[in-house]
Amino acid sequence: MWKGRDVISIRDFSKKDIEHVLKTAEKLENELKEREALDYAKGKILATLFFEPSTRTRLSFESAMHRLGGNVIGFAEASTSSVKKGESLRDTIKTVEQYSDVIVIRHPKEGAARLAAEVAEIPVINAGDGSNQHPTQTLLDLYTIKKEFGKIDGLKIGLLGDLKYGRTVHSLSEALAFYDIELYLISPELLKMPRHIIEELREKGVKIYETSDLEKVIGELDLLYVTRIQKERFPDEQEYLKVKGSYVIDCALLARAKEGLKIMHPLPRVDEIHPEVDKSKHAIYFRQVFSGVPVRMALLGLTLGVVE
Amino acid sequence: MNELKVSAIKEGTVIDHIQAGKGLKVIEILKLNRTNGKTVLLAMNVQSKKLGRKDIVKVEGKFLSEEEVNKIALVAPKATVNIIKDFKVVEKFSVEIPSEIGGILKCANPNCISNSEYTTSKFYVISKEPLKVRCHYCERTMDEGDILSNL
Image 1: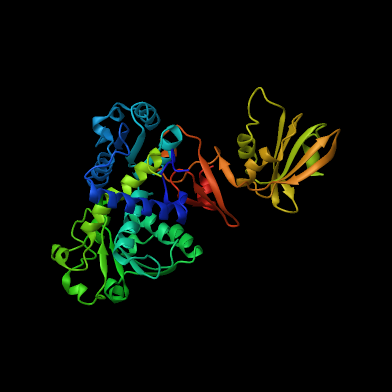
Image 2: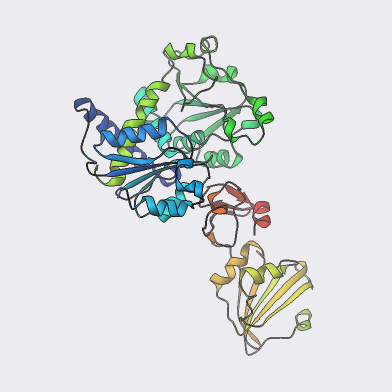
């Protein structure tokens, strides 16, 4: 069932699928504690096609493939590939699939990964398509929440920052809709969650509170998921400057939070979490980064058909 | 009888109750404007009790299937289709919005891959009343206004 499957959008996942990925990731993480590297993907090749820059997503996919005993080829920016000569995405994918067993793609256009999956015979994993989806980030976020809290149901979760352009919060909120949670959407007026996503979440029965006032709700939350205001998604720099630095999480603010509040961030951060917070018991964003490897190992192993 | 302003057809399909001004779009969507195709008659701004003004398209010698006609549901949701044999209406049906729409609609999101790469657009109808569709590629939702300006 998993062999040959594409991972494009959280929409394509059932709750059962999500739970299976999380369980597989946990199993692989435990195996890695006993041995440095595994050999499930021995002889297999992953192609990473990054048309947009990335540190964590690309490196953790590469690390995951190496840990599974496989090999990696690819490019880290479009300017070093034939795309610069005007090659279509369709032709790039048709070419790359001749060299590899699985493709990971990040692309600035929404829907690019879906198109790639239609063109390719081999599995395609979406590592971010414009402002649309970033399903592997979502799965590692859920893995982190489950690991930290032991559960997802019953939590009060705040999503903070750029809820308009941030693809991680779009995917994450869709996945959280499978669970019994309360969602606090905290953002400046200009960067509110798109109407169509809020409508869909409400239809699925998620309790949603929208506010621009973080201080008012900080004491309610079990988990605060912070995102960066993404300069590159603003058509106009003046608009960006209006909302830049809207929220800064620091220790003074956290004094008003619940004892057990955890703070996550998909990173990179700019100035939205003060470095003084890193040492606090609330900060779990670097542990969240670690989750990227076992979760991506699980996805690569499952789609390649080398892990059950 | 307004219909008689354009000659009655012996055999073929009459698409009636098209919103005034959308007749040409209907012809375009059904690809009836090919020079090697069947004879097509178009009446525009015909008086109608139901719609005030309406367009009518008659296609001679061709029986359009329900599936084909459903493609025009986005531009002419109130249209009725009459199948004519020997100058008589032998079958009559209303158009219905299909659950998937392929090809005829362009995605309203300029950053959608379907607007820059060679693809056939595809949309899922998520609500018929009010009409709302979701792009198969970029997953954005389009409402009636977006749909009409991107047909």
